[in-house]
Picture 1 (cartoon, helix red, strand yellow):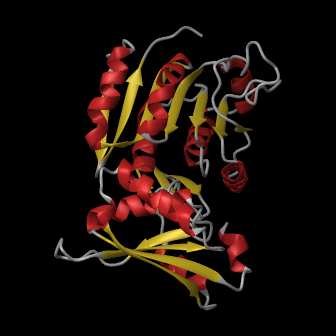
Picture 2: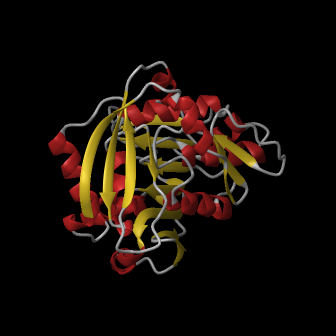
Length: 326
């Protein structure tokens, strides 16, 4: 996390010069490699020029690992490897790097939500402020997929609904739901006990098994991400979130609202399971606009016709509605 990095004497950077169309793909790859953060140099006016995407690290990832992640990200974005012109690794001098980073990380407004770093105070009683440590490119509120999900939560989540965040990352979406839930209830524990069913119905040894009702549940297969999510939840003063290390499993209970901000290659194999666990609203994001037909065809193939598409930049979010009894 950035807190740990503040005490460190050495940092490293990877500079990737690429076609402007590949900038987001490279940021995606850096995020997958657990970068401290990313930045993009000024976008060129001429499409023939290159842009430099910089990823910052406490330790440089292995060469093959990094190149594999970049190739994978380019494929997801429908780009060829030729989109990357050069890759340079370097050590970052021990200037006050964290202070420099703070200059560039400002609050982001998304509907009623404001996503802000811990050192920023947002004095606006009309807004719901979520503080997030800026240790990852995705999940800090700056990426379109996160913003699409936040808007869908604001529009469709109702206090008292149980909520499942699949692939929680920094925990931002679960925290958003928890803040909305707390805003709408005076006794969140009482509502939690009345609003959900047990997380697990058959196998108490499952990674999603808990002995009490979890109205808001966030799960992820990345244990490091879960640590960050828990710290962010504590920093935001929300105690009504359960965190679970592991994937969504078939014997998990259903939830009123399910959100999966992943990628299409992860979403499609588990789409049937996500729908089975959704009683009211399912939000899917991490999907490129050019992949819209793939996800809508898959939904229709599972007899889901009531859905809408929202767009931001190159990305879409799908909000599907259904009516399942508790």
